[in-house]
Amino acid sequence: MSENGDKQETTLDPDDFPIETEHGKLKTQDGENIAEAKNEKLAEEIAERLNEHAYKEECDRWSA
Image (cartoon, rainbow, N blue to C red; front, side, top):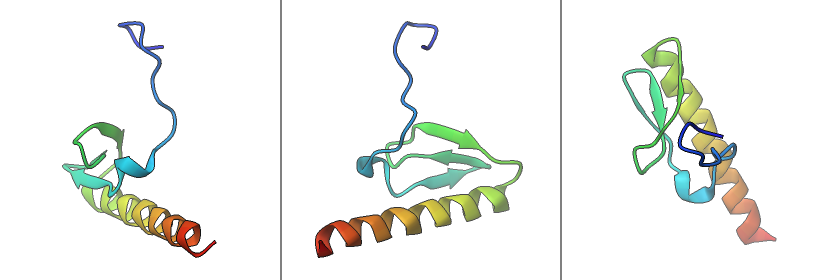
């Protein structure tokens, strides 16, 4: 639980994508910080992989 008593989310929802980066931070499309990487390049790679994975899951849902 966060300091204000709200339960912090532990999963990403489809509405959070695409994941974007800014100065080494990973953010949802709404601008919410979700993680911080050691450097900008690593953050971009993580975001790219997460976005690719989310895209494949979405395609699988539509093809089922």
